[in-house]
Length: 485
Length: 95
Image: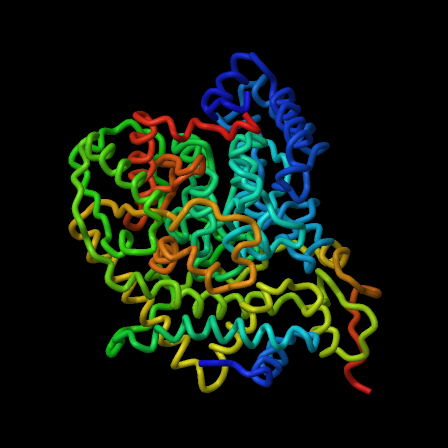
């Protein structure tokens, strides 16, 4: 059953080949059998899942179901789930039981009737590119368990790639959906900023954070993204605009579609074995009628330094709420309020989170604000304008998602800058706010290579259409790691 | 820009983070490396560029000034580390 698409699972439920309860039990069994090795879940919500599966079966029986009703899903542990621990992979929130649901949790589970299997591991507060900063330990890549799954949505991708969940939610602040999707061979999409509600999604960098999906195909991703998207009055940056139909255009021909290859994304730094696969994918798209041309995003080399000012600055402000008073970790044995703050935060946050809080505090502090924060916001504008110019001549921008395939666990943990450079191809889309996705375009030494597509604002349907067309003539997305197939 | 151990202690104080003595040295080195990466920004030509704070050219949405949230005081206090008779407890602030 774990090889079937969401549409096939949904048909199976309707045709009574299996019930949602049986389907849910199948995935829970797989989680029990395999997750000891992968560590992709922080919390498995077995009892609740079975109860919701039975409710979904009842909905299907009385013909009150959507296509997604009864389909299991894993939630990244950054989304607040009423009555269920929401840890953000931090000691700070290890005992935090959320008193409310995130809007997307409401939409997917209450409205659409999907069944939550549990909460997925991630980098602490989504800060990381390897899922090694989690308080709950690293996640392993199902394709090679000595390697990282990517991050920060490492648990979400490992669970889906190993067939422990048909689909999972994820979030992307600088590449946290796309880079792990690339490293685990999945299809992951980060929609336009403001398309999916951020209400109840624990904030990291609010002008960059956006929720999305990791799935086994563009079609699966389209089904779930469709149900997650939409205006939310509870999120002040939610966009008041109808959601496009992401499914009806999947089968459109891409003949005549203009795709730009930014020369900066194909410069030195891209591993030759990955480059070969990206180039082959470009040929495949050309075969489907796409028109390829070279473009330039001249300011993109500055996206990593820009991000490491903007994101930590926003994080230092967002994470000020964790003070040991209202919820979360509280230190023992302190005599003053200032000590309570300092010791609770010193004990509750891991090293990477502390580094980013300090960087953010530093670049916002008196005397440095103009030189760093204001300058970064200006460069952010230049990066945004690069895309505006590009989309005057092309429909989509294509490049690699990551510089190389998954790297060994522990190989970059002592060098934050080396870790940050993992996101060199993904950060620009967050800075600009545009939608972007990654899909598997082949394997190098048995490890998946990710192809990235970036589109103009609100072009999710077009991105998914191109990915779906690519997946109609290739079968990379259907491969599963042998140890988990 | 390189950060000294003294800079780290000052920034940690501003961010209300208690660091142990053996954390300060490695943080100084790591943050100096990160700021070296960030220093690439100083070479960018940004004269006359408007700073971009947000990806969407949107105005802050307003809503009617009406109470919409139910009172969930008990649910919120149930997850607090220390409360007493409806108030959050902290160490004594005023002698």
